[in-house]
Image (cartoon, rainbow, N blue to C red; front, side, top):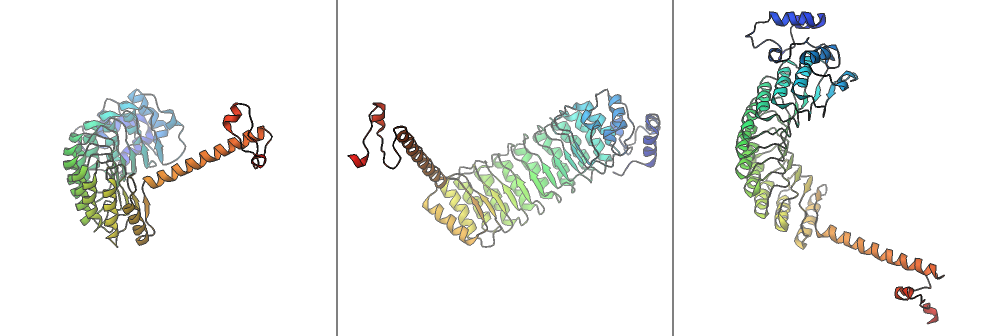
Length: 424
């Protein structure tokens, strides 16, 4: 994935004619030719890009060749290293035109194409470009309906690309079949550090494939796979992958269906994992049983710093089990703990106090009766103040001062004034 050869750069500076001549001279069967897949697309080949080409003449030439209108925001783009192009409706042909102009670009390092309806066809062109471009390191392709075709193209790209560090692929209708291609890329690619696969359609089979890939991966530091359809078996497979991984620091599996078996598998993973620092398992149908089995891992883990367990039906017993696990682990690294909203029992309140004494820097957040009672008390106090203020205003209307007047509201309705206390 080196920069284009000198001949390509020279052709770019001579203009469209020279670039077309160079393309015609290339052998049709060589896979090493830069941008070959792009030139094989329905769009005729445009000139290779010079620095900042996405905002210059080569982008316009590529748009004319592909028969699409150029994005005005690109033409007006000030000098910089990012292309923010969200919600622009590029479509597949617009993506091809942009890809042609970015093949040899050396100035752009961040490419944001979220929500552009690229589909598999459009992202295939972007993927071919990313095989050749060795400068872009941050890519957002979220919400583009990429499907299995897009996953296949991205997987092939990630097997060759050694530059991308952050890749966002949320909301792209990836299913279990697409997960097989992505798992291959996760296994082989060691450069991507941040990967977002949330808001997709992964199920238990995807969990098995991705779990094995996570176990083998040696580059990922942050993985988001929230809002999918992982249940017991898929969740357990993901947890086993976490247990074997020694690089991942942040994992977000919230809004899935891990259930108690998935929580238990995560607890087992925490026993051996000594790298993970942040874990979000909120809204995963984890009940008392699952919380207690998960807590077994907390008794031994030393590295976890942030744990989010909100919106799980853990009840008072499950939350107490988590606190007891921290209490029994003097070497715990937990700094932030978010527990579900529960009725606060005496046992829970005492455990909170005891844990805070042991770990004074721990930020413990939970809902429950304590806050509800405080809100109710404030509401009663406010209502009392409003009643007193109303009485004072009524007294002033009758020429009385708040200190010596006591009005009977029933008497006011009858236009009768109750005498002051001093005159009774």
